[in-house]
Image 1 (cartoon, rainbow, N blue to C red):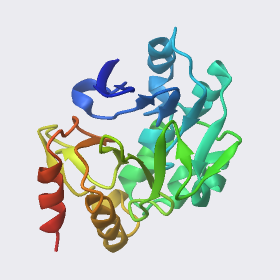
Image 2: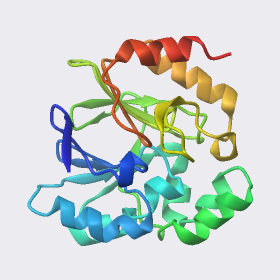
Image 3: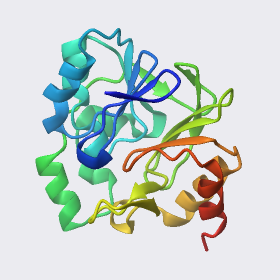
Length: 219
């Protein structure tokens, strides 16, 4: 676990390939089901009040049920994706593809009852919920205006997902429900003019203008 912003700690995997964050006392995202033991161990000694998701995809939801059960914390999920979170049928909500089917079998964890439906304007650990649909139907990001910190999720990624080389990219189309809406969401968060951007995949970006410029160049 390492500090990446004020009150925010990364619990990322190898080379920040799949990230989760402890945001004050809320765990945001939970990687794959194989990360459950690692995440629970890393959170030992920390007061965790809740577990929230940016979106219900296999590499964000995988350890969610285990986290909620072992830490006895409530589950907070974007409102449009509650049914998916509770059923665990994540692949049904994603674009059909062989790799998505494999992720359902290998990475997805069981469904778990949702305690809070997240909507735009809600507050989570001092961050505002921003609705950023496109990569998934109900995708959300978390924004703290006081210091310009954005927990982005997968609106963009900051690494090449095959080589793991750092750099800004759009998420792969094979995992993105609506590319046009996702670009609109990227513009929405770029308009916030963030200073620090924390991604679902890839290292933190501390040059907000690089993020804004990348979004401005999207077709």
